[in-house]
Image 1 (tube, rainbow over the protein chains, first blue to last red):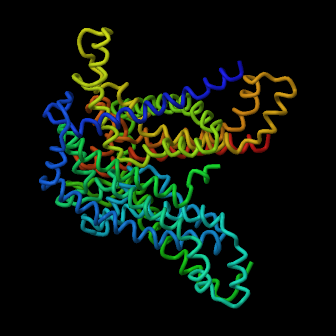
Image 2 (image 1 turned 45 degrees about the vertical axis):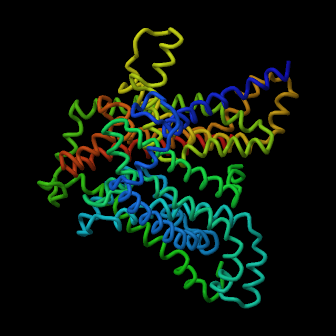
Image 3 (image 1 turned 45 degrees about the horizontal axis):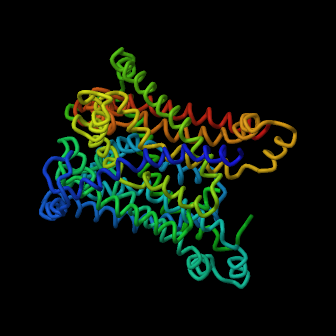
Length: 259
Length: 284
């Protein structure tokens, strides 16, 4: 009797997974389709992956996206890590806390149009740099949050000992804090990279007319209608996300922080 | 709480870069956007900094009020569905053995970290005329000819739910997980049925987190323009589409910013409501 009722508890979970993963599975499956018709499976082939390699627009978009994503990742990681340590060890101000976390919570569209008005007001040319700067508004708080989770689980006695023995805050940071934080920093970096790789709304509003990122290219492809090469591109991007999330889990056991 | 001589310098080095960047790239643009509502449009986009309140009176035209109302209804529906589906899901994950819990949580997080456009595109393959869902329905003889599944308001609701359901499940899971099991045991020992225990112990204590999830789902749904476009076929226009069009098509930035104010107001109201409920739960 008790067993039966406890099994029913898990039914919604299974339904949600079907809801989450059936659409994705269909895209992946169809990316290996030999035929032209996006709705009928005609046998296995890697043709669409081959087509991607020859597609100038997609390659250009990919190149732009990688430049932005690597830049976002590097700046967010350095600045976000410093910010995390600063927030945890060097301030108690609620205002500073709010500035450090709010941008990540704001609706992307609001931030996107705010940035567009800002760039125009200061005559900043739209291009890859403006996209990169826009992505920092999410990247920096993201790295800061992930690093702080790690920071909270670290023993502070080593840092205190270091300070008591006369080390400067910077010496303590580089010799003690930073090595302990390494897994959190790596995870934050990876998440910032993945975020930038997939981000569309901020990029769409901050992009110049000649330098679309990959999501912007995908947006115009999808609006045009269903073409099978999107499936191949989608499958590759999904793979990157899966690998990144699994790596983050390995480094930080991020699911534990939900408790 | 002085932390020694190097303290001010350390503060500057650690907090300076991040705070300067986020102030410049988020705080200043947001303030600029809010002030733009009081100014006039440039001919080809941009802003002419001359004072006006015309943007506000325009906002109250039936055309725009209808879109705002529609968006509230759609986002509200998505949020209610996300709560009804997300709560039992989060609850179920919390009942799993530890090892499965990790896997289940990763499987919930993963969609959130994959490309949003691609996930919406996936539904166009599933739901289009010759798509899989229609194929399956005709296959088992439920319908004779393909249904018009794409480009309806219902499709937009499904798409938004697909996009943001994870954001509902995670905070609720977190709350259920933190719940002291002794509270439920006490309730059971005092003779309450499992259903009674759920409604008088578990649900009230996890409500603040469920409301955080509701805010996280409602706000991006309300301001979305990608889903109404890809899955709504431009028929179901939402606030996000209005804002996008004012900036990129009509080139009336100040009016676009005025519409965005609606988003700001809605967000603030929701956050305040969440804070009130949260405080009440804590003091109870």
